Image 1 (cartoon, rainbow, N blue to C red):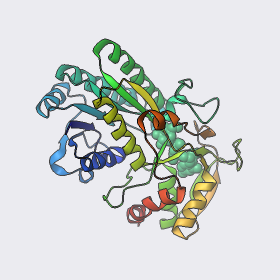
Image 2: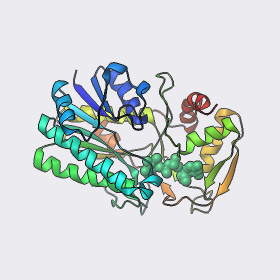
Image 3: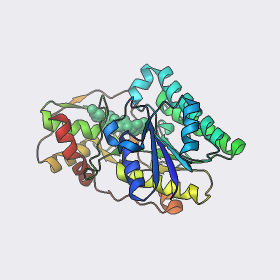
Length: 324
Ligand code: UFG
């Protein structure tokens, strides 16, 4: 079976992907500096605590483990923070990625799956969004991902580095059976915050009720983290089968408003969600829904979690423990 290096494998989406890779029989090595990841999210012997910026050590790891392909998650992900500390985001997400790519070039590793985001589209002209939509990020976080994506197009041409770029929509849910969960600090994402409000009784804030949507709140495409992980497996198989570089959206194709997500949380927990209404959050587009037909048709991927209630239910046990 192939040898896969997962950077950021101790993080939320990374750890779910590591779990699926192991289940499929891949030989997995995890590289993580544990700046935001968790040691206990990864089987101990597989974890190598190392900075992406240590090009020499990363090169040695790639050679020693005879790595065939890299899945690159390691990055900072908070949109709000990226507007306050853009240098930190460009350094970590862009320069860190380039250090990894230099190590891959030195070690002769020519296959990469890159963790990108719907944030590269900024405020889309229309939804559902196709991969051919204009790339126009509206925050530094999205710009860092768009920059790495552009670098990868050149690294393919100049170095023969084949890459699949996956643009995630709203990652959510958890694999409770595997003991994995979402643990961002601080937490900014909607579903964990709704569940936190249920557990603590402290109201969460709905950001904006005057958007041009049916109920006035923002619409997002919530994609279960296990379905995202499955998209990475499909991408790896494509690359290991000598597939060309490509880019894919990863979403269900169905949008839910903030009020609809709140209702789903009330259905699953059987409790009211304490909430208040606040102003719009800066930089939030009204509606982001993926057209993922390319991923379906080219790589044969299908989301298993198509009902919001099932997604919320998968997160509920770990969120109960987290906020108790
Ligand atoms: N929201 C609230 N209250 C909260 C938190 C969120 O009303 O306390 C709303 C937001 O305004 C938004 C929706 O819930 O309308 C979802 O917000 P999230 O913060 O959960 O997710 P985002 O859509 O802002 O962000 C996601 C990813 C980012 C990615 C972005 C692409 O988490 O990494 O999509 O636009 F950049």
